[in-house]
Amino acid sequence: MEEPIFHNRVDLTALNEQVRKIKAEIGKVIVGQENMIDLLITAILSDGHVLIEGVPGVAKTLTAKLLSRIISVDFSRIQFTPDLMPSDVLGTSVYNLKTSEFEFKAGPIFSNIVLIDEINRAPAKTQAALFEVMEERQVTIDGHTHKMRSPYLVLATQNPIEQEGTYRLPEAQLDRFLFKIAVDYPTQTEEIEILSRHHDRKGFQPLAEVNPLLNADQIQGFRQFAHHVHIEKNLVTYIAQIIQETRNNPMVFLGASPRASLAILMGSKSFAMIHGRDFVNPEDIKTIALPVLRHRIMLSPEKEMEGVDADEVVTQIVNKIEVPR
Image (cartoon, rainbow, N blue to C red):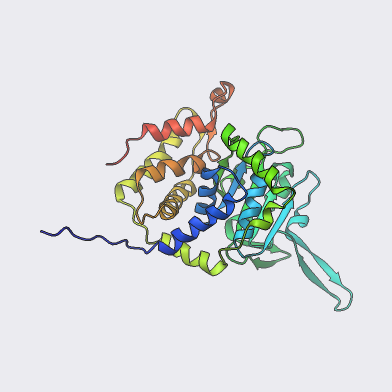
């Protein structure tokens, strides 16, 4: 008796080829950081914003710039500072003497990919200016609503060590980031490779080496694939159990919202796609749960005083829930 032939529900050939090319292009400049690159591509396919946290000098900003060059869409960069005003980000109405009317001058937030460097250096009122645009992809100014063009992605960086001149991001804003990616130091082997490449370039700018690969229409098409990625009902229950445990765990003061469970669902589907599968497995969920939850839970004061961090707690929670078979 012949064995049945199984076919993918979604033809991911074109997507996987593009993912391979994107990694190759970024690899021309960035050494290592495979996890960050995988999660950034996953975020693009999931239509989600990303917060990148790491000490200075680990290529957070450079990777975001590279990504903007690979995708043929508009790009803007905003350097957040303590004196930055909401109008500096969103734009403002300016009186036109010729027409005797007010005209709206769009701020740098009006782009397709917006890189916000050192996002925790701006005060609360400037942070609040991002709430609407991150959630609804629109800005309302002087009673007029201005829609953003798709794709719309906010990539923000922050330094977890330096505290002077920084402001804690509001919980409501943190919840609007699909992922928080923690970028670590390179290994010794990777550091040697970084030094060797820098020496060999002899002053040649690395950004000039990267070629555009994707346009807005292709991204929109690839995003549609995620709706057809299969996930078993027991895995949906698994996601819900993880989220419920964040709300009932004694180590956690504030658990994750339903937005977090949706983020794990969409992120798992996109993560499965870039690895050539049209179905979600438990490992996808376990991998995606950490970047989705690490910035969404608030630890109890006792655990914070003990020096426990969110990554430890999320890992314990995920490992505590029995994996569906």
